[in-house]
Amino acid sequence: MSVSPLPDRALLRCQVAGTGAWLPERVLTNADLEKMVETNDEWIVSRTGIRERRLAAKEEHTSTMGARAAAAALEAAGVAASEVEMILCATITPDMPFPCTACLIQKEIGASRAFCFDLEAACTGYIYGLEVGRRFIESGAYKTVLVVASDKLSSITDWKDRNTCVLFGDGASAALLRPSTGAREILSASLGASGEQAGLLYMPGGGAQHPASAKTVEQGLHFLKMNGREVYKHAVVNMARASEEAIARAGFKPTDIAWIIPHQANLRIIQGLAERLELGMERCVVNLDRYGNISAASAGIALHEAVCDGRLKKGDLLLLVAFGAGLTWGAAVLRW
Ligand code: ACO
Image (cartoon, rainbow, N blue to C red; front, side):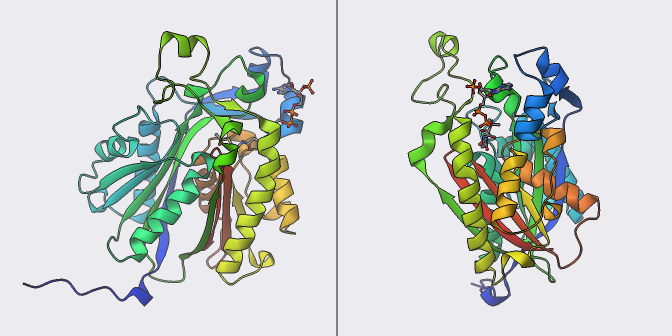
């Protein structure tokens, strides 16, 4: 019996070979929100930096958006869907509890060889996804891994709650991971979580604890709930800590980072993070003014936009960093 030789582990490194993103066309501005809840543009811009967000149409689901971002990442990498061996979808708004959204994406893009599963780490989903995908590549077992991050937060938003409805939007991003062939590489990551703070940001209804019923709907348990002020406090501290750890693991110092590509929840959080890392805001990729917070998808959309507009130069060190429900947090350092 002949078996394939074990791969040379020292040579196994992983790169992001292509990125993709997809955003719905419909724009909801702060002026539109002024007509829906007791809020105003000045409050939203000064507290968050958000000016408008995108909302998916009824027929645009988490899987639909994810499949479009995935197709874009495959095209950017010059890889056919038939070559994909694994699809991981990070989301907190799956099309349905099961089957997993990754399976629905597989069908939509025609990646019939791939095995599929979802990963739930809220806004940290893209970074958790990159780290899981990277390890599958580095093990030598797989050569083509698709990480998709897609969220349709409008489907779990209480449009009568001004504390949350001004913050979120819909969209998707994707990264195609392959073994590294040059300098481009995912160098390191640092992931963390604290279930102690699970109650700060959650959606109580529709799961096994509170199965959907007329009562859960009446009580609004199918909407996202957030203690924004408390979440904020944990965000900057944990993002900074994860960033410092990931940068040190890669063998660098914060000033070596060319671009911070953060989760897009709040401009003040990004400013606080940059300050702690002693890096200027000119090194931060920001798009929350146009899209708001799209949970798992946000960091990947920011990366994709920075790739497309030519900001990233060959060899640049990138810091991807995020924070979200769980609570979860994570950072990854990439050489571009
Ligand atoms: N318009 C006008 N006033 C408002 C609005 C609004 N949309 N929302 C809240 N207010 C009011 C509040 O009622 C409060 O009034 P009060 O002082 O009379 O009680 C006042 O504004 C201040 O409210 P705070 O909640 O203290 O405002 P804060 O400055 O903390 O900003 C925000 C709120 C934007 C939510 C901020 O706390 C934040 O960004 N938190 C972090 C969110 C986050 O990062 N989430 C993680 C990712 S999401 C995920 O994982 C799905």
